[in-house]
Length: 241
Image (cartoon, rainbow, N blue to C red):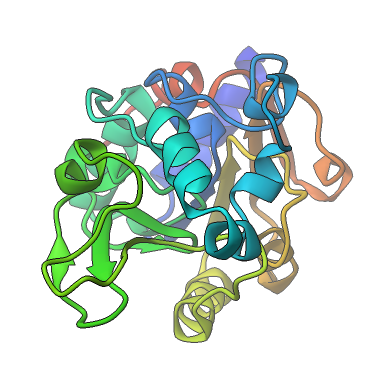
């Protein structure tokens, strides 16, 4: 572990073109549950599987149940950035990190100070009326009952990518461009099983691919460096210089 951390530090010290790609594990240390861990949403009991309740078809056919689940499980208004978010923001401020590419929808990277954040799955902080396009704050959904509606009568939909919905192609192209040009690619807090986001690793041509995760992933054999541990605990030990 110590040797791997030292190698990671050397690569970070010698680079000014780092890209970070992260998943739900980046925010679990802020108290936001992921899906696949022992305490994740997939291991909790609901009337329907989480991937069904967060699908576009369920949103259309069972809007009240969708928003009830969404409010209880996806909104985390009290969550604060952890050591991982803060260290990544510090690396960007130092001119070393070019972009954060995230599967998370909580906005904690921006709250920590990161500026170039590509949110592949959208954000709970953005909400729009499907009928007139008016923007709404998250509190409107959090404090509503049943299906949140705009003054015009339209449903206020969170700007998150649901199952069965496509990712923003322009955002994906930007992510691919950053990864293709990166000197160091750090991937953290993700099991790398959700596609198409997980396929972004295929676009990295370099030889400094770092995987930081609490448990093994199916991509470990492709990495040049594997660091086992919670992403916040690992990055807390990295110096910005």
